[in-house]
Length: 137
Image (cartoon, rainbow, N blue to C red; front, side, top):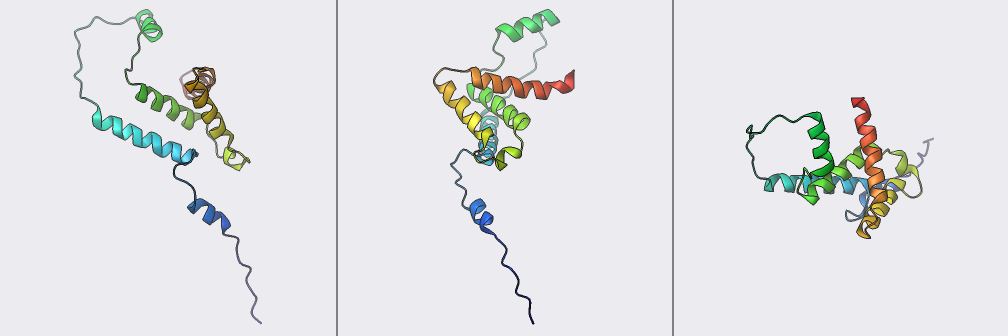
């Protein structure tokens, strides 16, 4: 007698293959961030180090952080913030939930930002930065 093998449930493979490349999913977010960074890098101008300045004290440094935008490009700032959030706050457990809460938070934060409510996005960025910077302390 031959033992009839049970057919394995491979429906999840079809789901993976059929994922929409335009949907807001973690993998697509990462691909978009990488693509945008590469695009910025190709257009970025070279700069020369200028040593004609006086030394900066820690007081000057803190004043600069509080008052002077160090990055001109909104696109670069957004990529930086979103990359930090994705790296520091994402965990695969989100994918196990019925609705991916990581993506829900990102989506809500971005939509709130469009409506000039930046608090949720700033809070996510602060949480990500806290996690990232804890190794410095």
